[in-house]
Amino acid sequence: MPFLDLPSRPGKPRQTGVTHVIDTGLSTVEVEGHLRSAGDYADIVRLGWGTAYVTRDLAQKLDCYRSFGVPVMLGGTLTELAWLRGRVDGLRSWLAELGIEHVEVSSGTVAIPPEEKLELIRSLAVDFTVFAEVGEKDPHALMAPYRWVESIREALAAGAVQVICEGRATGDAGMYRPDGEARTGLIDEIAHDVDVERLVFEAPQKHQQVWFLERFGAGVNLGNVLFRDLISLETLRLGLRADTLPLFHKPA
Image (cartoon, rainbow, N blue to C red; front, side, top):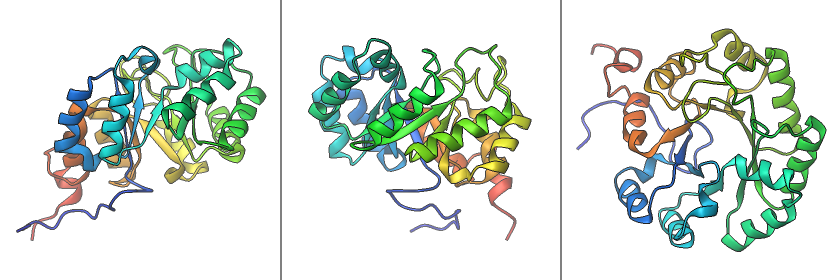
């Protein structure tokens, strides 16, 4: 029987405390193993960058995710490439063929003009659940905080259900300095002007996850989490690890 009073965690489907997981090209067997032990903590999986396009057993892997009730979306890099090559309709058809209902619209690698990116969000939102991403993948490219806020608001108004704040799979760009430290002023300004529940902060590194939990609590939405770190992150959310135990638990 449970004997600890842990922080309250809503069940799936969650609106807060959401964990976006990145699949970096795992096999179906690996996915099944991870989901058997930690599937309750994965709210949505992004098939990283263009891995879906070259995964031989993609259909079987998608079936595996569905069997555990975990929705899937493609990495935004594929959306950017489809736009660049004039193949958005082909992407739309492929998503429908695969039975994927979620799609990411980003412009971190391909410089999609802002209005065209918003039109892409509007168009895809007719048939899909759209997550927009804001921020640069270049660690040395700095976007002013007010532009982050404007871009996030515009993406939400265009039909994105949530906006993913760029941090890269390596946690060294966008919201972070090249050494992985958070740009605290930027993040605080974004959170001041946008409802945090509409945001997903990419935080692949443990110290970044801890920082966001300390700043915004267990209900913060985090992304680019590796499957191997799913249970680790859940213990951080519940104060079952030294880093956050004092944050969520007081002496009896």
